[in-house]
Amino acid sequence: MLLLTIAAVCAGSAARAGLASTWRAAIHPDDRVRLLGLWPAWTTAKAKAVVHGETADWVALGRLADPAAAPDGDWPTAGAYRCRVVKLGARLPGQPDVAPLRDFPCTVTNDDGVIGFAGHNAFQSSTGRLYPDGERMVFLGAMTLRGDMSQFAYGADPDRNEVGVLERIGPARWRLVLPWPRFQSTLDVVDIVPAS
Image (cartoon, rainbow, N blue to C red; front, side):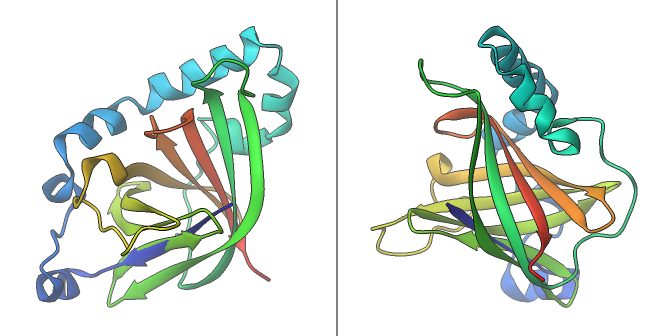
């Protein structure tokens, strides 16, 4: 339901586009707090699933829902991917704590070393930039809803900002983990695999 586009920009392109070259220089203070709360988001979401009897659903997600499942490896190359969002830890009573959504197309771009991620579905789109950060990449992006007059960019509206971490969890599989999203869940996990 959500289509994400990943966009990456190298230092030269970043200077040309007026973008910060590191996520630490670009991140909004509120998003820094959300990113620092990544582990509590995992534990809170899992506790909700256990309390509400959804442990088997959590376990069925395998490496996707295992916070320790992030081996070293290559980052996704530019191209077309298939994505699926799994919402974990519902914020509203009566909603499932493990809620996989439909697959959607997403893309990774590489503009002279600057990496981006983007995805779109019938209801919303997310676009942003991936910054290398050791064994992971930090994602800073923005959500645009159907009906908005234009695409939001990161930092334009704090309520639309998205922050997360991209990790490799298999030979050709990655996940984008978004802690404390603004709506619906405690943790959104985007499963990313090549489109073909």
